[in-house]
Amino acid sequence: MSSIVEVRALTKRFDELVAVNDVSFSIEEGEVFGLLGPNGAGKTTTISMVSCLIEPTSGTIVVNGHDSAREPGALKAALGVVPQEIALYPTLTAAENLRFWGSMYGLRGDALKSAVADALELAGLADRAKERVEKYSGGMKRRINIAAGILHKPRVLLMDEPTVGIDPQSRNHILETVKDLNAAGMTVLYTSHYMEEVEYLCDRIAIMDHGVIIAEGTLNELRDVVGGMDVVAVKVAGVTSEVLERVRAIEGVEGVESVEDALEVLTRSSGSIMGRLVSTLESEGAHVTSVSVTEPNLESVFLHLTGKSLRD
Ligand SMILES: Nc1ncnc2c1ncn2[C@@H]1O[C@H](COP(=O)(O)OP(=O)(O)O)[C@@H](O)[C@H]1O
Ligand SMILES: [Mg+2]
Image 1 (cartoon, rainbow, N blue to C red):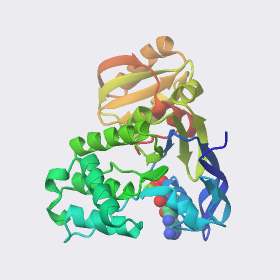
Image 2: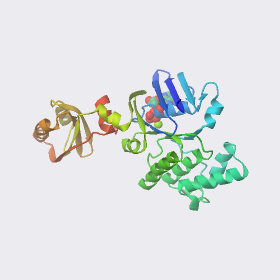
Image 3: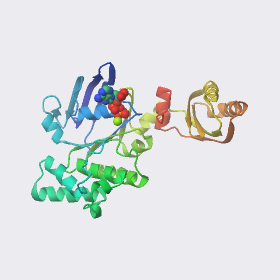
């Protein structure tokens, strides 16, 4: 079976900067595929090339059998795109915005009407369809933006960090919407720097950093990258960068991440480092309030592969 999205050796240069560097992945029909990486990793640049918004420096993109270089029109017809930036007219109502986008996709008459009604329903905003979008919260705008991307019932939906900077309720709504669309058969390419979201949504995940895919697989396959390791979570106050360096130097410590009032230490030998860890922290004047051992997650994978945190 051939994949519905095939990206091969994709590269994008902006002068000296290689924003996307020899990236390859494929997405099977019906999958939710995640592109996880910190700010500047190259996620938006990748999505922009797949949607033919910008031209690759080199490499090939095939969506639904159509090559982006030869048949961009047919390729785009198979795609819905939810960009990071909101693309709505503030002085128009939600319904008017959707009618505008629907007509851009070539929908007319009853087909347009029912597509707009379906999309409003999906966004959970049918009862507020006649309000101007400028009165909407950030989260509601995002939901309408998603509705605009699926009006023409695309085979593949590209979503670029759709939950950044919005309220938890809208965020949950969006995550459930992705689940529902996928259950109805839509293939989704979802980018995020929130590992919880890709863990929750995605069948397969590519982790991206500095324009390169550094790991790819199912959640379980990626967890195997840190197989045999634990995360020791230490609640601690007063951690300075010097303290962090001392902890990093402890034998058996594979990586350290500082998260608000806690440290997360990646190790293969949690039992034997625990004592050293606490005594090092206390001797440096940091105050430990609790220590617990947890399972590694995608954050641990990223930390292990890059030495830094996704949250930075
Ligand atoms: N139009 C552009 N011109 C120059 N540099 C760009 C342009 N677009 C993106 N970049 C750079 O490419 C890199 C990747 O950016 P981007 O794809 O937006 O990352 P992400 O979406 O993962 O945060 C960044 O270093 C960014 O500054
Ligand atoms: Mg981006």
